Structure formats: structure tokens, C-alpha cells
Image (cartoon, rainbow, N blue to C red; front, side, top):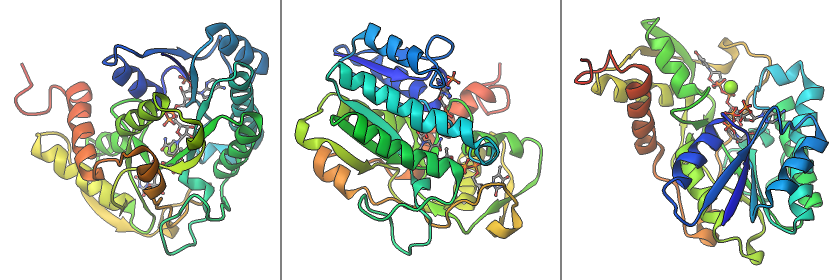
Length: 301
Ligand SMILES: NC(=O)C1=CN([C@@H]2O[C@H](COP(=O)(O)OP(=O)(O)OC[C@H]3O[C@@H](n4cnc5c(N)ncnc54)[C@H](OP(=O)(O)O)[C@@H]3O)[C@@H](O)[C@H]2O)C=CC1
Ligand SMILES: Cc1cn([C@H]2C[C@H](O)[C@@H](COP(=O)(O)OP(=O)(O)O[C@H]3O[C@@H](C)C(=O)[C@@H](O)[C@H]3O)O2)c(=O)[nH]c1=O
Ligand SMILES: [Mg+2]
């Protein structure tokens, strides 16, 4: 089957390309800038209609959470208007769209982990545009599967795990917020889940699902785990100082609790992500191999 995925260098698209390479029955094509630009609806339509895929994975998005506070219009054009164009083009081909959304659609004020039907009440521009994007996708294409995920990291692109390792090479102590709770998710695990959905797109499975790493932590807990894993492999490590959100000033106010309950996805697709600690270990190892080859033990020549 032919799967079209949006974006070129993003974490998720790169992970999908890697995993699909080992699936003989799957041919994965990615479309991205400049030929395919979510800010240019006609380029979106043209690229998708020309490729004639069996299913579309909408992975490209405006993901800069703080910058979005100042670039509201651009974030909206990409995450709402652009996402709707992608879903519409899939609808014109009568094929499903798998659209990726975020835990930041929730306010974070709840004490429990969020289920799909819980009220979404984003507190950031990014979260607001992603929520509106979900609605636009659902109304543009009845054949939609919306997957909300969270705290995505990978060996690729920009993410918290890579940032922590980079900072550790420069500082002895790193202050990290310890009062925002969520589920760190490896883009490689998310890609596996998406390929499972893409190859089993039954009509009675359309709808919205949460899919994120198993288990919960806060950003400081994630950073500490990353440094332990890295130190074990001879990579960079630092001491983590727990701080409160109020001590780390950012433009966008992140949710304090954005944990996602992934039971519906497991019931429907029979798949659950591995514990976040295991997947983090895999990704730390790969980042050390690519970014810190000469610093980790046993790899230097
Ligand atoms: N990162 C995270 O922590 C989380 C992400 N998500 C969602 O998961 C999805 C994948 O995220 P992730 O892979 O981490 O994102 P990245 O930030 O790693 O990549 C973003 C991708 O979007 C593409 N893109 C951005 N603007 C445009 C545009 N105008 N036209 C075409 N392509 C564009 C980029 O293109 P290019 O390749 O040219 O740079 C890139 O491929 C997104 O929908 C995101 O909202 C959900 C929860 C957490
Ligand atoms: C770099 C750094 C960040 N932080 C804090 C800031 C923030 O509250 C938290 C995470 O920072 P980041 O900027 O990496 O995370 P952020 O950009 O908020 O990550 C989000 O991205 C979007 C795309 C999503 O959809 C979300 O699921 C989530 O993954 O850690 C520290 O406390 N210390 C530090 O040194
Ligand atoms: Mg970020």
C-alpha cells in the first residue's frame, strides 16, 4: 500500500520513513516544502492528488509552542487551514487521513489522565490551533483517525531529550520544571502505532484516540532519566535541579497535567507503547551514537 506523509525533516516523518523501510508491503512517500507548503492550499491539493496514496498521514505542523504566541496567524494557517486542506484532499481521493494532535489541547487543570471525551480547553495558541485543526480535519473528511500524543522525542530534529544532552555538555547543573506531568513518547513508537493504524484502517475505527508513552513523569524526571542513561554509556550528564513552572519563564503557559489515558487505542488496535523509560534508553543510545560518537565509551577510534 502507498502511504503519503506530510513533512520532510520532522521527528515523526523521519521515524515513519525509517520504520516503513522494513515493511515490504508499504511504500511511503513524503511531501514537504517547498513543493508542498501548508501555507499554500493549492500546493497541498496538487501534491496529494498527484501522489494518489491509499492513506494520508498528516504529521507536519507548526510546533513551536512559544513562538506561536507571537505568530498566531501563521500557526493557525498551518495547523487549522493547512490541516483541513490535507484532510480534504484525502477525502477527494476517498481515502482516510491519520491526523496527529497534542496533549496541549487540554488545560491541565484536571487531576486525572485525560480521556478522548474530556473537555479540551487549550491555554496556548499552539494548543488552540491544534484543537481547531482536529475539528477542521473531522469535518473535512469522514474517514479520519485523530491521534493525540505528547512530549515527543527521537534521535531526530528538535526535542527535549536532545536539548538536555546538548545542555549537559555545557553545564554542570540544569534547572528543569518538576510540576508539569505527562507521558514522554518516542516518535519511533508513535510511528509504529501509526503504521499499525494505516495498515488496518477499518471503517468502525474512525475517530479520536490518545496514544502516548506508557507511564508518567515530569520534565525533571525525564531529564534525570536521560542523564542516567547517558552516563551509563559514557555520554554527557548533568545534575538536575527541580524547579516550579513559575521559576521558568516562557511565553506559553504549559499544562501542569497533560497525561493521556490510552486505553481506547489499546482496546481498538491491540497496541500499547512500551514504558517511557525503555524507549528513552533506546533514543539516548542513538543520540549518543550520532551526535556524541567521540565522547561515549567504546566508540572512539
Ligand atoms: N513534538 C512534540 O512534542 C509533539 C508533537 N505533536 C504533533 O505531532 C506531529 C509531528 O510532530 P514532530 O514530528 O515532532 O514535529 P517537528 O517539529 O519535528 O516537525 C514539523 C514538521 O512539520 C513540517 N512543516 C512545518 N510547517 C510546514 C509548512 N508550512 N508546510 C509544510 N510542512 C511544514 C516541517 O517541515 P520541514 O521538514 O520542512 O522542516 C516538519 O517536517 C505534529 O502534528 C505535532 O503537532 C503532538 C504532541 C507532541
Ligand atoms: C530547555 C528547558 C526546558 N524546560 C521546561 C520548559 C517546558 O516547561 C518543558 C519542556 O520544554 P520544551 O520546550 O522542550 O517542550 P514543549 O515545546 O512545551 O513541548 C511540547 O511540544 C509540543 C509540540 C507538544 O505537542 C507537546 O506535547 C510538548 O511536547 O521543560 C526547563 O525547565 N528547563 C530547560 O532547561
Ligand atoms: Mg518545543
